[in-house]
Length: 251
Length: 198
Image 1 (cartoon, rainbow over the protein chains, first blue to last red):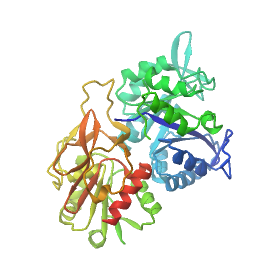
Image 2: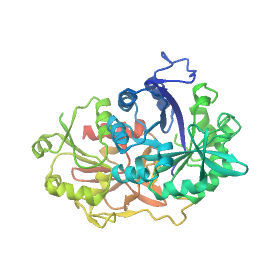
Image 3: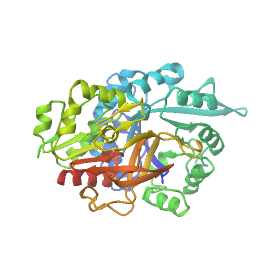
Image 4: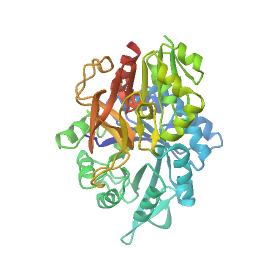
C-alpha cells in the first residue's frame, strides 16, 4: 500500500541551514548535509531544501550544496527558492536534485510550468502555493505570503495541475507558525479535486495534527520544519504513532 | 569490476551514479558500445517518455546492443519498461526482453488513487532470487511512475497500487526494478549491492 510521506524542510542561506536546529548529535548545527543525513537515517521519506539566499553567487553555492546532499543521502529531495527559468531547473537537476519547486515564478508566468514539465517531466516539477484566507475566500499569496494576488487558491491549484505540475506543496499562511494544526478543510477540498499528490505545509504542532492532515485533510504528504529541528517531535516516534493510528506509513 | 551506466536521452541519472559511488563501485556513464560490451555489469536507468527513448536507442543501435548483451543487466524505472515488449505510452514497441505489456494506471476512483504513483510502497510476494537476497521484512521502495508492467512469469516481486503490478522482473541475465533503488534508502542500497554481486 502506498504510504503517507513525512517531509522535513530545511531553510538554506548561503549554503547553510538557518532557523535554529536542536540536535545534540550534530557537530555543526548549520551543516545541511549533516542534518539531511540525520533526517534520512531517522526515517524521513523525503527532504525539501528551501533556498533563501539573495546573492549573485547564489546558484553556484546552491548547486554545490545540492551535489553534496545528493552524494550523501539515499532518499528523494526537492530544492526550491527563487527558481524561475528552465535553465535554473536544468542546473539544479544536473547538480543532483530529484525535484525542484517553483512558487512566485509560476504565478507571474504560468506557462513556465508547461515548459518545465515538457522539458524534464512532471515528476520533478513541484508547484508551491502559499495561500491565505481573506474574508472567507482563499487567495494565492506570493513573497512569503506578504503579497496578495487575485488568484483563487482552488482554481490556481487546478490550473497548475492541468499545466503539468507533478505535485503541489500547499502552505497555509494562516496556519504557518501557529502549531495549531494544518489547514485540513482547504487541503481536503484541493486534494479531492486534483489527480496529483498534495503535500500539506503550515501548522504542524503535534503528532495528532499529522494524523488529522492525512485523514481529514486527505494529504498525500506532510511537511514541517521547526518541530523537527527543535526535536519537539522525533520522526521515529511520529511514524510509530501514525502507524498505530492506522495510517499507512513506511517503517 | 567495471560498471557501465547507459547514457541516453533520459532524465537525470546522476543519482544512480552517486548511489553506486556510495557502495564503493566505480561506474562509467557511457553510450559507447565498446565500453558497454566490455563492462562486467550494465545498468540501464532512466525517467522520461518511452517512444522518445526508444527512438534514441535505435538511432544509436543501442537497442541491438542491449538485446545481445550477456553480462548481468539491470533496467531501472523507464529502463524496466523499455525492456518489456510494448508500452501504451505513445503506442511504443519496446525491446521485448520480457514478454510483458506496459500499461497506464487507470484509477477507478481518482480521489483515492492519484496518477502518477508517487511515494514509498511495499515489495510483496518476493521470489527466491539473487536480486532479493537478505532484504528486510516489509521492504519499502520509492516509486514515481504513471505506467506499469503487468504481472508475468518473469515477475520476481510485486507491488500493489490500484492493482498488483510487476515491481521487479528477471529473465536470464536481465533484471529490472520499477522503483528507484538509488532513492530507496537501505532497501535500495541492498538491491543495488545484490545486483553488483550477481
